[in-house]
Image (cartoon, rainbow, N blue to C red):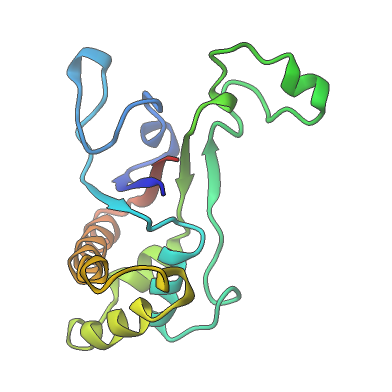
Length: 172
């Protein structure tokens, strides 16, 4: 199980400020800015969030929904190690050895979520809850999906309104 924090930011540079810190909790001591963020469990940006966006937009996966762009640690502070020797040579505090990552979501995903029809959302979330990714969840766990879907849609609408992108900070 992982923790995923979806947030909006004006650009990639802002999105990766202090990447090792949560996006839900601002920390002036470490210059972590205040982000408009939604905290989730289990809802990764590669499969489960894309599935929600595809259901909302009535598009096919994976062709209807774009992939994410890995921002951290893939190019920070240097490109991802390519060989076993490069991986073995990484220092203990290398970001490549941590469980933290930051992904930029596509504008397509942002817009599909932002344009959700609120009247149809209960049916969409019901279909989403029946997906394979949630097959091992209890009915109590699934009650979590409607409020989180509403929160993610609201975040997407605010990002679109302000010309911002959506990002996902994760800790596995």
